[in-house]
Length: 449
Ligand code: UDX
Image (cartoon, rainbow, N blue to C red; front, side, top):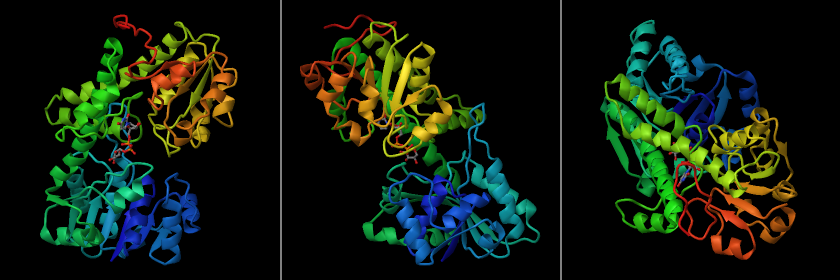
């Protein structure tokens, strides 16, 4: 089957490369010429494990190609995936400009039946909007179907998530389109992947509901961690104790500086916004967002508390800048807000991240970027662990302690064990851990010892 994917950003490129790996003939389209020229040579600028190899292999085997000629790609395809960006506008609503442009192009060049599938996270109702736009610009009436086929890819494990998904969601209006979509995903039958076949609006809703629920789990455990800090309980044991209840589940209960990335913050906002447009004032989603913002503030207070209330004139070492490990993505990364707050309070900040430093340099030019974790620690008054890259899980702690001007570690990802750190002579601050040093938080009672 010939398909095309419009938009070679993160979602589009992973989708295109993986469908090619499934045996489809895939044309990926983008209007940025340099990007297409690079991809034609097999050069992938997105940091995603396994993606460059998959692109190179399928290019070589002739199933994957790249072009700026959208009309030609659409003409040759039975299924056209829309995977262009839907950035958030200032008011939190999704900006559908690029989606509209693509819909117009599809409508103008469509000669025969096609399935038009949305992959990007789009507000409920977008597929219907696409349908209307295509109809309005068609030169002569040509039959087509619109489908919502949301992705649930995590950065850093997107290939695995695509190849072995927990489920595939297909929202469609007609059985013909459903049959075509199922054929596309037929390699997944072998691994008995569940399919959720539903209407278009519901499929669009599933994506928002999934992301908002996951974000809610994180905000929930972060609030519980704050409470654990206040009373002296241990959030890891709480997470295990509740997570073993199968109705709750163990995943996504890891406390930290709050969620970031290109999806959760934007999708929670998007959900609040389109609910409001539908006349529904949500209660939970705004609270999830509020807790997530507060969490960043709380982390700044933790750092201040670890250093007797002030960072002015002190040097703070930061490990990790990306919103999570194994990516160079710093979008909505809690690290950015936390570092900016430290700089604003007069700290000198040294930082190292295995992948995100080039991106971070552009938004945080006043940080001193270092070649590794040890250079960060040298002479610093505290080291703050902000992203749990594997290499930060196996630090030579004795060396770190010797390099620091004061033996203070603020571990905002709870990578280390409080007892071990104490034994090694650190003042160790974590998130909701028993046995860690717990500075009082503003507005919170003095922690019981
Ligand atoms: C997410 C969804 O998982 C994916 O299904 C969707 O399609 C896109 O958004 P991604 O943004 O790549 O994927 O990251 P994910 O691994 O889900 O983590 C998101 C954020 O939550 C990160 O900042 C991470 O550090 C944080 N997180 C995650 C926690 O703080 N605690 C957890 O227990 C899990």
